[in-house]
Length: 341
Image (tube, rainbow, N blue to C red; front, side, top):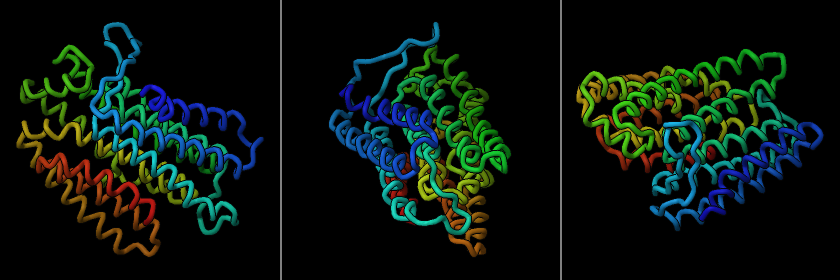
């Protein structure tokens, strides 16, 4: 079991770190092959881990005093989310492979060793977030994933537009992480633990005011990560990059992390009818706006960003309706479709 968790997290982390260190000393094609090999290995480990679904992981880390032990959880939905996201990383390499042998066309920038390294580091952080059974571990993993995604423009565009776009993406993602942090701290104060399961269960006993803050913080985090209106703008930055950076790093991994968070917090929404109504109507309004925007776009790549925002709005509607299982299905089904589109 532990060897498969290491293959899912530590192997991409090591591969990304090595590629980041070697940088331009390697040809981009070599970096691409290394990335594809690492993603294939991580996908195989994710498949193997599904056979351990529901079992306890005999491994934990104590980091900060009084924060509790950080553990891994092999819940079925988290495992399949990790499998779908990791398999999509491998698929993105396959899709980008033919085009990587040709000159870049249009506005898409060719892949570099650095972009491959960031993809692998993001994969390691995302899988940590999917399997984390502790809020602090998940928060740190989400922060690392956000930083890696934000750094793509800086390493791809250099001093031209890179710093401006990196700052923009990072600040937008930080808005969502701030909401997550506020909700996490309120639950920790109420439950006396950062273990995700017990902390979320304690939410039902919160006062209406505190529950409103918890739900609002988590929903804000989800809204930003899935790129629902009006937060689809950070995903538009990825349109100019190669297929792997656009299709996976920008359009897949962070939305999947948001959908998985939404899946976990959906039961909390049932305890606050007013917020459920707000989430439903705001997400429905956002779906209408981004669908109209997609229809008037002539560039298919730009239109797909808005369609992805509509999918995020749909997930929020499902959560407001209490359809937790439908959110998990949407996550798994939409992951390969985003890349194929």
